[in-house]
Image (cartoon, rainbow, N blue to C red):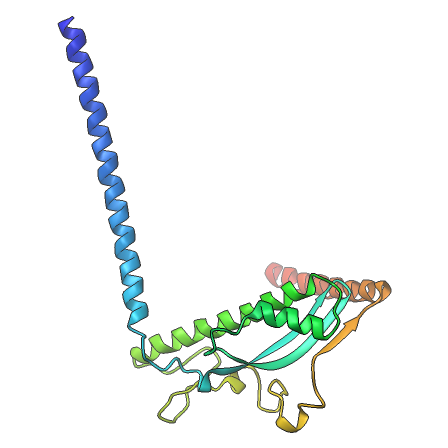
Length: 210
């Protein structure tokens, strides 16, 4: 009986020891995660009040996409300083104004807008970090020589003559366009895209083999 009781006590002690080890490991992981989150939050706050290198916070966006049989093209300006601007609401309104019947078009437009805004935000934060390190901007955009160090968005999205940003005199001439393709046109377009992809794959294979 004594040896049985002793074995039970040892087993209980071992279980308690393992439980304490798991608790310590869990506490250590939580502390590490908390420290990491605190570091990221501190880094984010360090950018507070700094110029995000976006001139007037107005950026040009471009749509050129096909969803099923519907093709949508448009270029417009977006105020990223207005946090009430909602890509989803914009997409739904645009589709309603253009009488787009396909319910998959609005979500596709929303995704296209969000991807462009995310890319702009990512590059803006990178520009802030580089400025803090005393480096010049990289990756296709250049910092203004003026005191505001604004991002030349027209250069990033293309030359000033590319037509990405509408001129005031062209506001009533240019606008969003919607084309509804026939099934035959869609088939032809997909066949051309398929041929183009095959050619790219062949070139890539020949390059790797060479």
